Amino acid sequence: MKSCRLHFGGVAGIGMSALAQAMTTANCKISGSDRMFDEHNNYDWQKKICSRMLNQFANFSIEITPQDGSSINSDLNALVISTAIEDTNPEVVKAKELKIPILHRSEILSWYLAGFDKCVAISGTCGKSSVTGMLGWVLEFCGVSPTVVNGAPVINWVDDLNIGNFRFGNDSICVFEADESDHSLLRYKPDISVITNISVDHFPKAEAEKVFQQFIDQTKEIVFDESSLLGLQNSQCCGQKSLFRYRDYDFEINIPGKHNVENALYAIEVALYLGCKIKDVGDALKDFKGISKRLENVGKTSNGATVILDFAHNPKKIKASIDTMKSAANSIFLVWRPHGYAPLTNMFDELLNTFASTLKEGDRLFLLPVYDVGGTADRRVDSDTFCDRLKEHGVNVLTGGYDEFGIEISHKAKADDVVIVMGARDPYLEVFARGLVEFN
Image (cartoon, rainbow, N blue to C red):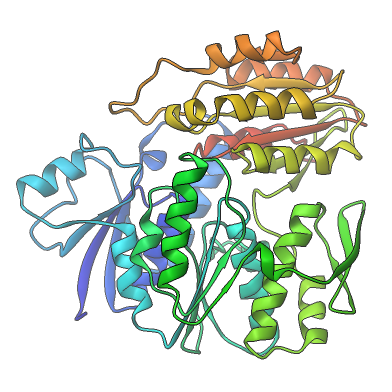
C-alpha cells in the first residue's frame, strides 16, 4: 500500500487503538474519533484517562477528531470500523454519502499481517489477550523483536506515551489477537495459531466449534490447543503469584489463578516452538506484570478494601475470576455490567448458574444496566430481568447505577473485603474502579 489516509471510528476501543497504532508504522496517516472524547467528563479519573490517551495517540501522530462526520472527506482512502459501530453513526452515514470505502478492522489487520514472514494468531473464547501479551513479552525477553497487536495493554509496556496494546518490532514476526466474536478471525491465515478454549459467549458452542475448526484448517504450520498442554505436574497460588512445574521446569508468574497458569502454558509452548530456551522463558514470565483489566489490582478504598479491575464478561471468565479472588476475600463486592443484549440473552442460563454457584453468603452483586450502543438490538432481556432470576436463585443482588453503587461500596466494603469491577466494552468501568480508590 502506498501512502494512505485512514480514519478509525471508535478509535479508543482497545482493539481499534492497537490497529490504529500499527497502521502508523505502515506508511499511513491516521485520524480517529470516539464518543469517549466527545462526552462531558465530570470526574477526575474520566478527565485523566481521556487526557492520557490523547497524549498516547499523539505519540503515534494519530489525530483525534469529533465523531460528528466532519472528518470524513474525499481525502480518505477508507473509514475503518469495528462490528460495534452502527449504520446510524454519523461518520458511517457521511462515508456512504461520499462513497468512501468502509472497511472492517479485520480487513485492515489482514492487509497489515501480509507484510510479515511469520504470523502467530492467538484466539479462543477466553484468555487470548493474556496469551498474546505473555508471548509478546517472552519473545522480547528472549531476544526476538516481534510486532504485537493485542486486545489489551501489557502492563510492562504501559507508560504515559504508550497504551501498551501495540509493540512495533524489528523482526518480521507478528503476534496478534484474533477475535472470534464476529467471525472476523476467518479473514486470517496465520502460520501458527493458538486456540485457548471454546465455550459459550457471543454465539452457541456448536457455532463456535464450527468457526474455530475453519480457523484451524486455515492455519499453515501448527496449531496449539488444549490437547497440546501436557506435562503440568503441579500448580499452586501463593497470594498474588502462581507457581507451577511444566516440562520438568519450575515456573513462577506474578499473577494469580489457575486460568493464568493455563495461559502461561500456551505462551511457553509457542516460545519453545520458536526456538526460545526454557530458562529464558521462565525468567521472562517471572518479570511479566500482567495484562491491564485482567484481575488488575488498582488499589484500596478509604476503608481498606482491595479493588480489582477485570474484563470478565462470559461465564467461564467470571467463574475463574471469582474463584481466584475468593481466598483473598472475607466478602466479595462484585460490580458487573453485561456488555450487550444479545450476549446476555445467549448466555443467560450459564451466567445465572455461574453467579449462583460462585458467590457465597455475604457476597454482593451490583448489577449495572446492559451496555447499550444504540441501534436495533432486542432489548427485551435486560438487567432487571436478570436480577429477578438471580434473586430466585438466592443471589444477593442490587440493580442501579455507578453513583449509588459507589456510595454503597464506600460505606460497606471493609479492609478484608475485595471489590471486583467487572465487564467489557464500557470504558467507565475503569473510571469507576479507579474512582473507588483512595489516593494519598
